[in-house]
Length: 429
Image (cartoon, rainbow, N blue to C red; front, side, top):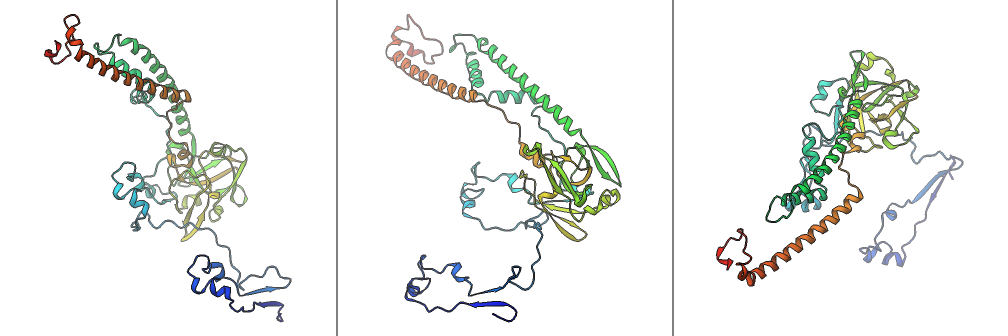
């Protein structure tokens, strides 16, 4: 023990034993996996230092300051040259290139090739943001319009094997040589079924149009030239700074700048995102919270945001804010997502990062799909079995009939003449 109260312990050096020479991490058997020296043995400490009655001592004399998380964008940006990567085994075999690139399942799509690796935007600068052609805040969840309703709805309905089966059956009934009943006996029930299904689908799509119109027509307040301008949600663009009041829906995915609460805190309800009704807190950027409710200061704000491209991850966000030649890290706690409701906060300001179909809410909703019940799936399997059975019976009966007619039936054509569809008159007997 030293005069300062430190205790210095030194481990005695051990002489190599026979086991260590033969296989304990060295010697002639060191090439074996069981005898190789591990990383723990290589980095094992040779001494230990401690101070009596002092729990706060660090390994080094200089204290280590905590480092704030800062987003580092990928190497490939909008104006950067793409980095050359060595092809891996998966990419050679079928991951979008190689000998199997001509296959539709293995070829890389144009969206994957041209997908952006980052998003750049500047607050209060629509001209700068317009060059990237980001999506506006208009949303559309409906499937049809007046022109595409009939063809698209019929195409979806004939995806049901039952409807397609009766359609083929009706077409075959137009041929009198192979049908014994009239075509309208199948056409009338089929048209009635298609009409009722189309009416139901049309009514549901009208409700979607009404919902889209109501959502796109909600009002928001955009900061312009030191004043608040009332705009519809559909007219909000990426980079706009908007003001929200308590109990209002968030118009787009926003980077929180300032709030009415101390320390830039605000509270939101995320029931439309994850179904939870308990309030969650979000925080404004520490460098922008000082602007408060100053419209002139918010109008002059020209910070540039560099962040990840649009994705559907609700709990993750990475980016950075570049303002006054300084960089500030952005996390998910600084983001307000579309669909949230502002609670217990009088007002807050935020700059639009993702709008419209690029918001996390819309990317999680997906497209409206054609619904199939378990009964539809069971009927599809049943009808496929019936069709295969009928095709097999028709082939068997056709072959047997042809053999009988060629061997025996042609000698009785005087009593039972063949139809005119038989191509060779000499075979009629």
